[in-house]
Each structure stands twice: as C-alpha cells, then as structure tokens.
Image 1 (tube, rainbow, N blue to C red):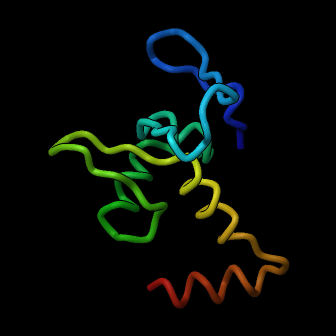
Image 2 (cartoon, one colour; image 1 turned 180 degrees about the vertical axis):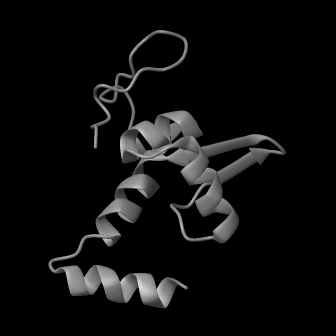
Length: 93
C-alpha cells in the first residue's frame, strides 16, 4: 500500500498534504485505489455491494473518497490472526 505523499493528481502536480487538513482532501476512485492497493473496478464493486470504504457522491458520475475515511476503513480491517479475517469474511456474506 502506498502512502499519500507519493500520490499524484492527474493535473501532473503532486498533492501537498501539509497545506490543508486531511479531512478536506477528496480522492478520485483511481487515486483511492492506488492508496489502497486495489483496482478501480474493485472499488466500484465494493460500492455496489456496500462493503467498501465510505464515499461521497458529488454527482451522477462523480465519486470521491475522503482521505480520513480511507484511513478509518483500512484501520478497521486490521486483524491479528487469520481466524479473525475468516470470521469477518463469513459475517460479510
């Protein structure tokens, strides 16, 4: 998984995460997928199923992810043992 510091906007300039609080940063699905280390299609699938990170719908085709929501979702999926991960998978179905 990559950190936010290496993330590039599609305008070609890097995000300066020190200039604003993290709560104000919205990432595109492509950027969020890069941060989470998954495919953009996986995020779309999770949105349909309702089991992915929270997102903001700014329009009919404009989905954004708050950086703080991605962090909270990722941290909420931490496990200490494989049985925890298996139990989570069974309850998610």
